[in-house]
Length: 233
Image 1 (cartoon, rainbow, N blue to C red):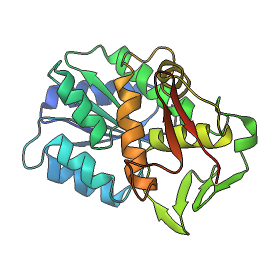
Image 2: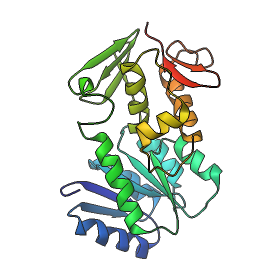
Image 3: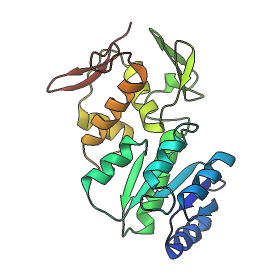
């Protein structure tokens, strides 16, 4: 993780101090923010490789910050929540977070999650080597796999890191049906502690962004009782 840059956002200064110290031991550059507005300002004015974002913040909640960041950046975001409530986790994913960690957490778990995300967004990923320098097109969708950008009818759309990886995997393997568990393992990793609802949330968000009518999708289809697949047009 040497040379990578992180933004840590939490109103509990001891938590921020501990995370910052630990990440700096891995030679990461770390900026810190203590409320939602400050976090948003940092995110707008800097380029980060990862953002650790607490849910309960002054001025703007972590959900609001995440939602606004997604309007201009696809930087991976890990939500930090003091609650074990499943709804908080689902909300974080709905607002565009890539992962979540429940407090109290072990800093080694935080670093492991960061490293897992870093591995997934590096050029050599498990999705397929043909994706490295390839543009994939179907219908009005075009994916720049190297630049990690997605376009609909020539207009760029903002996909999160995970949304992009799900779409890329499906487009590179058209008509192949992936079970929810399989997608979870391929995109999030076998050590990811979440469940298959994570996949469902991301598929729903993806359809909202790429389909003219998400309830009657042209591209990403459901095979009931089995999983999801991409239909080439």
